[in-house]
Image 1 (cartoon, rainbow, N blue to C red):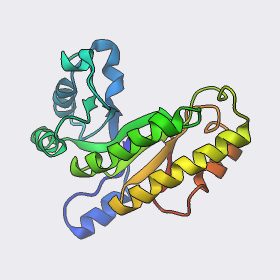
Image 2 (image 1 turned 120 degrees about the vertical axis):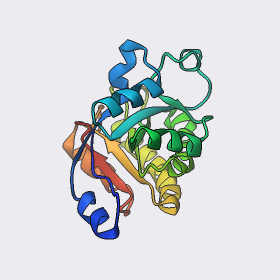
Image 3 (image 1 turned 90 degrees about the horizontal axis):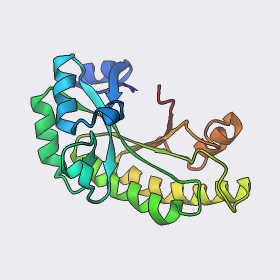
Image 4 (image 1 turned 90 degrees about the vertical axis):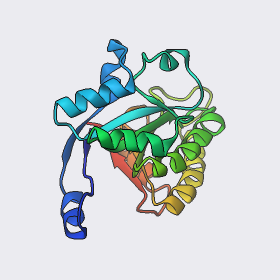
Length: 200
């Protein structure tokens, strides 16, 4: 993940916001069964100061045993932020990318993203990743799915604006890999807090 991050004085913050920084998503270590803290140690040892991870809404046995490099929303965001600061690492973004294009997007995806917004704010994170599903949604026309996502993003952005949280749509699935559809998605809300992340 490439992220522009604000640090230091106001002048420095303005300059740094325009700069790209190298970071990584902890899912790079999924197959290694690392914990999130082991990822922090790796980042510190390799001089990487920006990190993205997935958010878990609930309890997972593999995460609880320390074999998953992501964080759960039950973890205190302020304490986690302090731990990350000790390693010289901060969030570039957190990943709440449950696919919003399917029939279960409003039921599961929207509450998941909404719960992630205040958590991310307290964790010192300014961006949250969202996306669509890989395939055409079953039982929905393209127009129906787009209308549903427009309502979902409307709910999400209303809260995101209150927290000054950027909601990124990432290019992953059936709709987001179609430039015309992505253009329409970015027009769902007239807000500077709805953006696109190429996830490179």
